[in-house]
Length: 392
Ligand SMILES: Cc1ncc(COP(=O)(O)O)c(C=O)c1O
Image 1 (cartoon, rainbow, N blue to C red):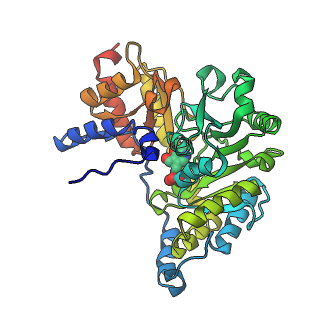
Image 2 (spheres, protein in one colour):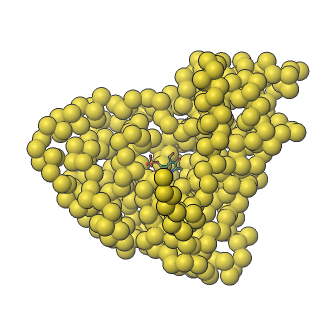
């Protein structure tokens, strides 16, 4: 077969680090081992019934069999504005300040292409969600990493970024509650971010994928609750985690009007809009009963407690996440993150994500997902406790 060479664009894309681990794990599963997969970020619970019912009903409406309007239905944008008002007390103009997205991932990858020219600097967290890198590569922009260190509560230190880098920076990605570290941001940190953005003309993109998941009674802060935030940036909110709708591919961007209109312009060339029935179900999710969200949050908190207390009881001194559904655990001495992930797979048949896959500053950690039942998490702790290195 004739081989057609890939474009320069495809060749620029970052390598998928986790593919090799997934492949190796697959080999263990094929051999019949009972593998506990704590490596991925796929919600394990179903979408709440009232949202699914809305989709079923809306799927029979012929209006939804036609092309949806470009940029989405007005009722969904209004539902987004109502959601922000109700949850965060933030006023959003439904027509000018909301863009509907095919999942947060799509928006995150589109944004650099909307706002950057080749050579522009983009500030990204390290460790961070790898999709930020893909959009940057597509736009031929330059990625500058901001180390997230434990001693700084995994928040970037803006005074450690060189002035000339900030002068060239056009875009910054932030994400709290944070994947992979599980920390949440303080209102002071967001205020400092707005100040920096104003001074250097940087567009802030706050990825609020885990906005609904905060522990110990703390509700994560929206970036848009910060004074002046809408002047300097946007927030991306996905329904994937809040409502267990990862397969539905629906999210939205809210905030700065010029950024929203750039996103919509690019999307006009890529898509029409989401299936109308998905838009109706998304509006139902945002404005319907919210008990499901509270219950989900409590379930993740119980799982967190089982995991963290279990690991501490066997002598692994781990930090409890404050939000998101991930725990970020320091690997025992003598292992790199990749070696430890391989060790857990080989000796305990447990999959975790090696920190190095999220960036250089992820070295020394593994990410553990809270996406298995309490029983499975207890079983994981039991298997880990039987490993020689954890025997006292
Ligand atoms: C930090 C972060 N941002 C964005 C997303 C994208 O979510 P989706 O594309 O399902 O909206 C994820 C998904 O895992 C994530 O972890």
